[in-house]
Length: 199
Length: 199
DNA sequence: GGACCTCTCTACCAAATGGTAGACATGACG
DNA sequence: CGTCATGTCTACCATTTGGTAGAGAGGTCC
Image (cartoon, rainbow over all chains, first blue to last red; front, side, top):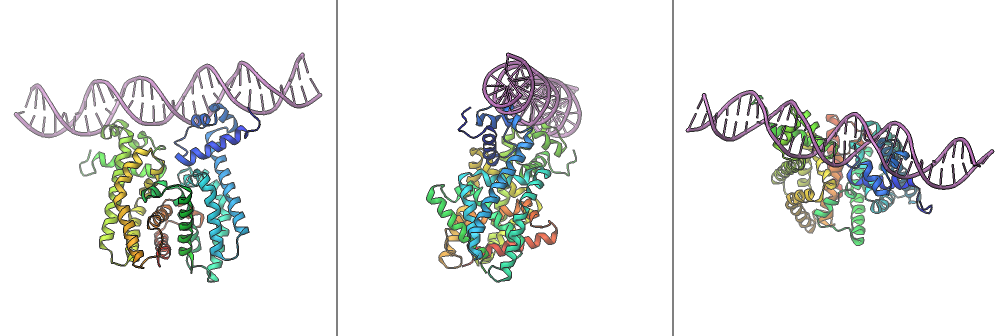
């Protein structure tokens, strides 16, 4: 195989992210992933000993990517909490648009066996705790609307992943996934979150 | 069979709503639904000629229930748009809590074949259009924050269905599904939406 | 009583699924 | 050259899946 391409393992992982994210883990067979990559199912099973292991690797990879992106956005943002939240939204929006399946995969968690879901939760927990503590701090300072910081984090998460993974809802209100449509959506999402969080 | 119970068809539909909503259409087999109902798979296939037909019936049933609930809430609410939105949230929250799978099923739409998704979209379209028109009107009157009414409808929908179908996200911030926890969540959700929509 | 209808069942089936066993090619290394 | 490791393949396999065919139990109507 051409050595300039990604190694087989990465290509399998990539295909699996897209397919699992778009249609769900159970709905996608190893054969389909293999076909997508241009390889046989047994090659998939060579790199990932079982479907479960592949799912684990996919979740791990997605979590890692998102954690990196969010971390960077937070570090580079200004001190104003609304600006900072803005930065996170923009940061998450970009990869999510490039790869619609990314956030879809996060949503998959709730229908995974508890063991796998837990492993991922542990992975993301530090991020959640930092966010919650940060929200509480800024609420205390009066920079954000006073509310339950944990639930605000969950609600913000639900809003962003929800809107990014519900193309049907957007289609129902006549939205189109063009470049200008995307910018418009991003700006409306930011305004919505700002309003929801501002004091 | 005891005639006091629900007829078999209804019991199949009920079980299918719960299972499809919780784990996804593809992940649930007819055998599993049948076992849940206490009947053989062939009995399921007697009432619904194919799995597709069962999925259609399930979606139709859920859409009908939600449309009725939302309609009633709107009719009985006061004129203030924020109150009215409150009423809809409360109205949707109740059945959603009683049956966590209800909103999960709505989320399933995005991973269904286009034909089925479209059929459901047509069913819900009038509701969406009424909501959008209503939001625009109240924005014009200055009763709501000025924004794109369609996207606001989609964002509100994403927030509500998102938070109701992401138990993992709620668990990650330490939330517990007790009665008091539910009331707390509902109130925080209402405050969040109010803030996001108020002028 | 017999014809018919309704409902659930047993008995199958072909296709797809996740997974095992092992052959075969290629190249690195002693 | 021979040996070993790596990576992909063909050949199977047991199980599960959605679905068909048709038997039989029970009630209703003439």
